[in-house]
Each structure stands twice: as C-alpha cells, then as structure tokens.
Image 1: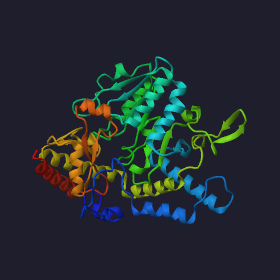
Image 2: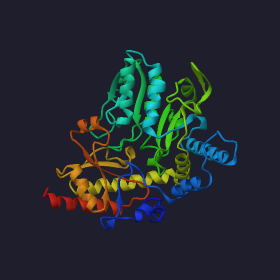
Image 3: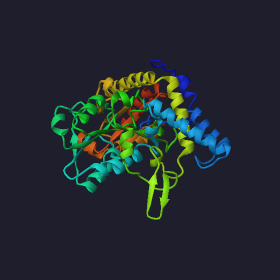
Image 4: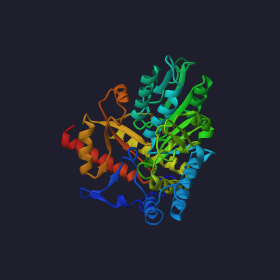
Length: 410
C-alpha cells in the first residue's frame, strides 16, 4: 500500500497486469502515453454493445433512447468530475488533440488578427503547439513562449512583458508529459484575463492525476484525454465557457449538429451538439463514465498523494543509480512523468533492453521536440506512474537499468 491506495487490490481490477512479457512479469510504466483499463471499464463497453447498441438521438425506439441517456449521463459525469456546473459546456470528441484543433479552428481563427499574439510555453506537447502554428499562419498572429527555469518549472519572471494587450490566447499544459511540471494555473488564468486573453489548458496529463475544478481555476478551455484516465481510446473532449462556445464556429459539418439545411446555407444547434457532427464515439464515452466512477471511488486526492509518493521514490532511486532526471524535484510541483538520461545509453536502446526485462517505458522526444532542444538532448527515457504502480516496480526498473548498463558497458 502507498498512501491511501491499496495498490495490490487495485491491480486485481486490471486484467492486462496479469500478463507476462518475455516470460517476465509485466511492469507497465507508460501511463502518460496511455493508461491501462480496469475490468469495470471493459465490462461497461461490452455491456453497451451487448444490450444497448444504437445511434444517438435519432431513434424513437427504446435502444436509441437508452444509448442517448447513457451518453448524456457520461457527459454530466465528466462535467462534474472537472467542476463544470453546465454539462452543455463539455464537448465529446477523441480527446486532447481534436479538442485543441477545435479551439484553434473555431475560436482562434475567428478572433485573431495580424499583430495579435498567442503565448505558449517551451514545454508544450506538439498537440498544444502545431494547431496554434496553423492558426497563426492563417491569421497573421505570432507565437511567443514562456521559457523554462533551470529546475524545470516555468520562468514567470518576465510574464508581464510576455503577456500584454496583444496577447489573445495563452496555451499551457496543466502537467508536462515530459517533465511532470505543474504550472500555477490559477495565477496564469488571472494574468491572462487581466489583459483580455483566454487561457487554454492542455489537461491530458493533469485531469487523470489531480483534482481539477475549472470554475475555481477560472480557466476558459480545458482539453481532456479519456484514454489517459483509465477510459477507452478515442474518449474525452473539451470543456469551454458557454459564452465562448456560443461564439465559436463549428469545427466539422455533417449530421446531428444542424438545425436546418438549405442548398446554400445551414443553421446549427446550440453547444455542445454544434461541435458533435456525425456518429459519435458512443461506447467509448460511456466507458469513460465508468472510468470516472472508478477514480471517484478511489478519491482524486488519494490518487494525487499516491503519485507524489511513488514519484519521489522513483526520482531518488534513479538518481542513486546514476541517471540524470529532468524536471522539478519538488513533487508538489510535478506529476508522475519522470524523464531521464542513463549512462549515455540512447533512450531507444535502453527501452529495448528494458522490454526484454518486462519493463515498459517510453523513449523518444515524446511529441515535444522544442523541449528536447531546450534540454539539450535528442530524446529521453520516460517512466510514468499511475494508480496501479508500486515501489517494487520502481525497483524493477532500476534493476533493469543496471542490467542494461552491464550489457552496454556504460
């Protein structure tokens, strides 16, 4: 047991953790990439297909009404989970990447003008960079960046010079997928609003691991990846302030998002349905509701404390083993994505050796190439932790690193 979580009991809910890889117990340390799924989520998706499968809204028969009710219940559950009072402020889609593109297309391209600025940070995932590059290129706006401090936190000493009346949008990760850095969102939101800008928070890593309240944080948009919080792939979506969603243009056109269609024009439904064209990922979002129920039963404060404890242990053990760990050391300021460089062994080579030991880590630039250049490395190895990981698995990681060292003679 770590903190308040009974990890041994939790692991029994995850069938995949019973697997052996290369005849060794599976040690899955890549939850920042995608989390594993508990039996409760798997069963909820199966139960939908076995008993309720039908398309949404369009049918007046019982199956369709059941599917619609389950889908809208999932929306309400996700809204409550992130502290949104209005379920209609939650748009379902495939997750963070699609959500960011939705805001970049439907909001940024509509409001930005030449000379306007988009402020990002040096630690952003490509999904919170490339869509803003597209928006800037289409509108004549420019991109600026908040730099990193030496300890892996954001250097906010020059924030007043970066965040000005020209800034129309601030995009920031709620938790870095490389460094684990958790910036002060409430402070950033207040600073953005003080100059009339909106704030878009990439919640892909934040929402699965910490309590989030969009109203208390006073943020305008929050992207959510369900597959990183025990839910199915292609689940999740976007939270947006209602007044901003109403101003935005649709991202996709097609069935269900319309009111009336004429040969030369169309009118659209109110949010969130204005942004949900075509057949949605019904089973996936219903499965996400089961994931939310699972996390709520554990308690997000307990989830966060567990992550802090295992992250502190991992940083200490990796450092003792001779690894260079990137990102803040203070676990109050970071999450459980721990990137490191070990003994001049390239991360890709390292990950292949670890795989032979049954240890799954991520190696590469983690869709954050600008950050790799700031760190001065071509790539990092990354171990990332979640509710089903234990200190014993950290020890297995370190043991596998020692075997890699012996193989490479590093």
